[in-house]
Length: 268
Image (cartoon, rainbow, N blue to C red):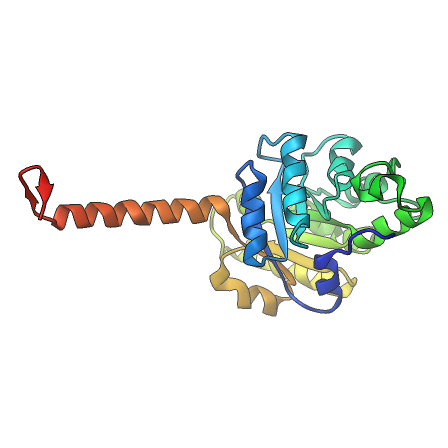
C-alpha cells in the first residue's frame, strides 16, 4: 500500500505550473465544485475562517474524491494545529507569517518525520491509511508526498530568505502580497516597488535552492508571475466568484425591469 501521490508535487517536480483556487465557504461541496472544474489544488483557510475539524475533513474528502490536492492554511499555534490537517490527509499545509530562519526550523521540526524533523507520530489516521501503511513507509512517504509551504508576507524574513529556502523539509515559499503591502505601509498597492522587488526575490531564492515559488494574484497577471519563476499560483476565490455573479445578475435585473413598461399589475 502507498499514500496517495500529491498532484501538486508531481507537477512541480516535472517543471509544470500548478493552478490553485481558494475556498472560503465552510462546506465541502464548494471544494468539490472547484475540484470538478479541474483545479490542481484547493486552498482552504483555518487562519482566518472559523472552520472546525469536521468541516476541514469534509473539504479533504471532497477533493480526494476527484484526485485534487488540498492545502490548508493553518493558524499559528501548537504542533497539533500543524499536523492535524496532514493526519486528516490534506496534501499540504501553508504556515502563515514565517518571520525568520529559526521560525522556519521550528515548523520543519514539528511537521516532518525523521530524519528531517520530529513530527509526532500516530499512523492510525487517514494519512497513514489507518495503520495499513507500513510504519517506516508511512514516515518516508509522508515526507515525500506531503508538502510544507511557508508564507513570506512580512519584510522581516527577507534578510534570512536564503537560509529559509535552504532548509530540508521546506518545499515551497508562498509570497503573500496582501499583508506584505500593509507591512510596508502601502496597503493594496500591488505595484509598489518594495512589493515587486520582494515578490521577485522570493522566486529567485526558490530557484537558487531548488524550492518552489508560490503566490496569489489576478489571473490577468498569470503570465507575469510564471515568467518571474512562480510555479504555483492561486488565481481566484469562491467568494469573489459568487459575489461578482450576484452583483451582475442584480444589475441586469434592475436594468431590464426599469426598461420594461408596466401595465395594470403586469408587464407588456
